[in-house]
Image (cartoon, rainbow, N blue to C red; front, side, top):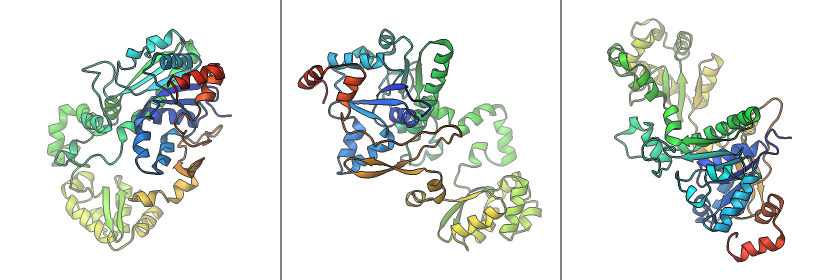
Length: 401
């Protein structure tokens, strides 16, 4: 038995943030209905442009039930309200105010399920300045300051951190809301802002604000502003990437013990005793020389050889994997993170495993992402009791696919 068995979720989301939230719930046993428009949600449509690429739909939508329904029509809206009436959680990532036009907002749902947990994920939240602004991952990465150190570059982010992180935070919020409902019997509305989440994850910005009164003093002591110590083109010898004969590795030697052991490993004992290198402040001021001394050693070895040598003396290090490398990592495989699910059309589809590892219970990967409208009849029949005739009429009217 999974920990969320019996918990029902209705998801009206597209792209990533909402689907990541409900994916985490579905993996732990919740029954999640992923509602799409009859033509399919945008992410599915993008995948369908390349034959077979729809395999990727399972990355965020495995373990879910699929419904294709036109919520722009009154009959479709009524079905969603009826689904919510027998569910615990509703999740969406539409622009604030857009679903309320269809009577699909929190206040509408409270009339049919008083203790519903209603989760809204949006770019800038439902309060504040211009909450109706549309946003995508790159917009909220930009407006949270995550890209400040790339002001001279127009290169786009290499991952969808805002979508992925906001979805995970939203799932955490759902569980907190469930605990609150267990204690009080009351549901609630959860207002998740992707900008909020990304700012909350922006250590550099938060630190600058916290130590603001002494930033100038810190800059004089370090020879540079604190934000530029670990995030600039100048590499620091105690924290950063070092080239090897076949790639690069990340090395951290920030404590006194780690630094001394690293000095011995790279056969540069002067790094321990020379005043230019024997403390953190000196290392910052003389970073180029220290990096060169360490990299002379790493360049003469493969990444695997560097990692092996430093692992033995407990100096934190790791190979900078390519995408191909990480998808074959032995540790990820051993921990079940390189998993697969069976798809009726595509066979086994590779998906990430479940990141939670509990001693008393576990989640499971039961099925691939649903085909468009795959479970329409089952959901309508088993969840809200529609007859075969009523279901056929909805099909004839174009309400469901």
